[in-house]
Length: 322
Length: 249
Ligand SMILES: Cc1cc2nc3c(=O)[nH]c(=O)nc-3n(C[C@H](O)[C@H](O)[C@H](O)COP(=O)(O)OP(=O)(O)OC[C@H]3O[C@@H](n4cnc5c(N)ncnc54)[C@H](O)[C@@H]3O)c2cc1C
Image (cartoon, rainbow over all chains, first blue to last red; front, side, top):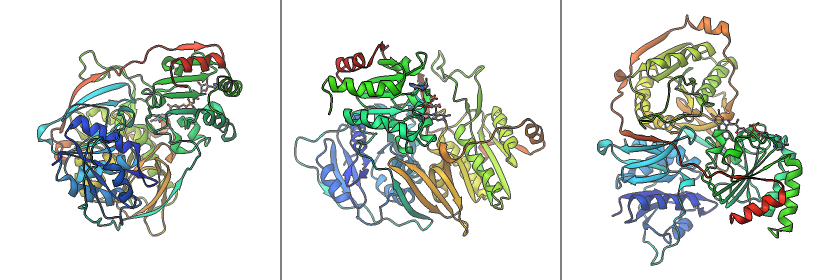
């Protein structure tokens, strides 16, 4: 019997990469393997994916109805019943994880640790505070009860496929009770041809300097050539140049692509905390004193409106993308 | 309607926070502090609900913290809150402790709406709102960027989520946590600061509301790993070459 439960998250009928990252964190807690709970209408397909991931001991499958769209008030009570079997419950620090997990912690009188970046031992963890300016080591007291953890997505690799046989599936997740106090109205989903920002290998991100939504579209050509996702600073989102789900930073997404290109972004600490786990940070800014150059591996000083088109041509000459 | 706005005193967002040489905390001496920006947005929303003509009997701000938190409560009163309550403790607490105290407080004060920040910019924990909603057994709408009170008294809340904007309707009482784009808070005006001195600010020991020992020990505060120093390149071709050299193209 596994001591760790990971709550799966699905997007468009597939397990999210964050779920695999949470499984990697679970493996650091207990190399013996973790159970994976999959709820909702995509559960059947996602369970098939889940049982082939390394480190999954069992997949616990729920009824298909009543869990979609995911509401914290519906998920948390069901998860609380499952949690009774485990010492720790993990979920990716996605918007759903951030919404559901504290509520779960309340229901199980557990102790919650947000955005676990490192596991030191099964009750000691590292996480970032003060917009990434401080790394804090915390220990849950032995008497503190069940651990409820969200997993910092930029800190963990995605658990890969397993070598041996697929893990068993048990169908024992209880029915959701429903929540008469909350009514789901809808999701205004921002769709884009670009890859998903959270999991993309390359990201091109724009700031206030873009000046308008039309200008922001300038970055699309560059992103397309690089096969990159688009990102944005808070200033660019606030000004309406980019949708909210592209915001990178302390209060947006915390990402770790191989390559991050910041275009016309000053590099405020609240932004930088969202990218400092990127393998390579590159920056284009007309101000040589911009703080972004303090953390950039490669910097280019100049006007983005001339550099971005020049960069597209230079990539073409170098045979990158098409 | 009664609105409760829990607020936290934090180091100002513009301060480059440093860890103490003994690693037991961060340097606070001579460092600028103020209302957590998200709490300021939550309070602003409460004020706007009243200003939009909805009957709001009381906007109560509460902080669970040390005596120094009186400063942010005074600011909140100057911004327009009606009364303030400091639940005083010698040690700042973690979200689980704060939520337990707030749970006891909502039992006593019976607010219809708890409006609070989605996270505090010091511990970045992002827990207290949903913890309170869970303990209280009431609906929650977290990371809200648009809030509307419907004719039947329920709330319609638009939330910023990973793939766009989600809209929920919730019955009251409920907990709503504010995201950055909910509104732009007003500035405090001098005369309001003077006037706010007349408003009630009560202080009660937080222990009376059930604050106990934290379930988590904060073992060590350390600077984050540093990134290696980078280079500046003269033009787009050199930029591409440098990225190739680093193996990311
Ligand atoms: C509580 C809180 C949370 C926050 N959370 C986030 C967050 O999650 N993410 C985030 O990004 N921010 C966040 N911020 C905001 C952050 O502090 C900065 O205000 C924001 O990141 C600035 O965005 P920017 O770099 O696009 O704009 P600016 O700081 O205005 O920078 C614009 C840059 O563009 C450069 N520039 C101008 N014109 C050109 C040109 N033609 N060519 C090239 N360069 C040019 C300028 O030199 C400047 O460096 C938060 C702030 C607070 C208080």
